[in-house]
Image (cartoon, rainbow, N blue to C red; front, top):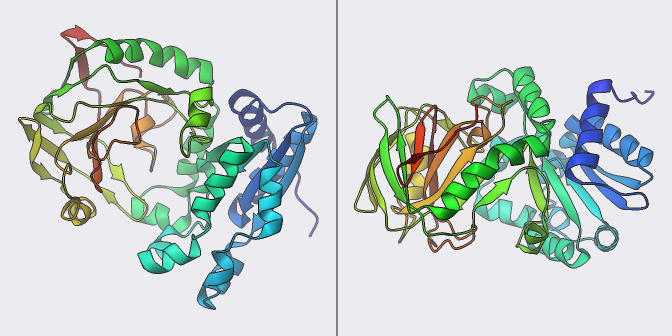
Length: 367
């Protein structure tokens, strides 16, 4: 069949990602990893890369062919680090990733041991990417998938529309919205979150670095483990909380999504820095299963996130990026600067429309 040319929508999306987020320059080399479900977007990214005077290469995988190999138990080949791919990675300036297999439910059903064999290449990939000094993005347009949309109870097209529109938000707009919040969180000691739904929670801050994710990569990002790939759409302000300070209750009014399901109607109750009670109306098993084996620190505050992106609304896997949403986590936070909680567990609740104060001063929330 003749190849379909990129639509105006796909071209606009590709141009924005390449110029505003990744700042691709003439002469640079760009690898675009795309599976069958995102081939039109990969095509557009390749075309716009050439228009910038840079050199694209598309790594393509077909979903059906991949699962045929999985069913044939070709785990050794699927988990390998082939020399020709690694050689290309070592000569790459920019890497664009649109997720791997779309059927996350089927991946999860394989189990951790089998999945570890199939993704054995992952640590070596990041090591090679770090050595190459590349920068890149993981595009959320690769996440929507029919069986996931059914599990989440969302319309597939609407989900994709939100992801695309949110990815087009100007990084400067996100940075402008995030700066006042960043300053308040960096200077403050106590943050209070209140809402009419029964939320009244006080958390601690320890003058730790506050990170704004505006969709661009900083020099500091590139130095962090796994930091060379950001997630688009962007739009959060995040900070590791004081692990010993938490008092009160937070009641969610947004869904908490994971790779294979979702939890709704959640709330956390804290006393003297510890999670003493929690509840979810639906999907409690997704929290409770891992919480039971989370070990030390599972019941302590983790991180705080405030969303900045005005084009998201209860969007699967992007709930923390919706403008005005506040995400409170318990458990692990060592992946944020200054975080000390090394628990094997991490869980969240998300509330939109809450009032936020830092040391008694109101914080102007986006949205």
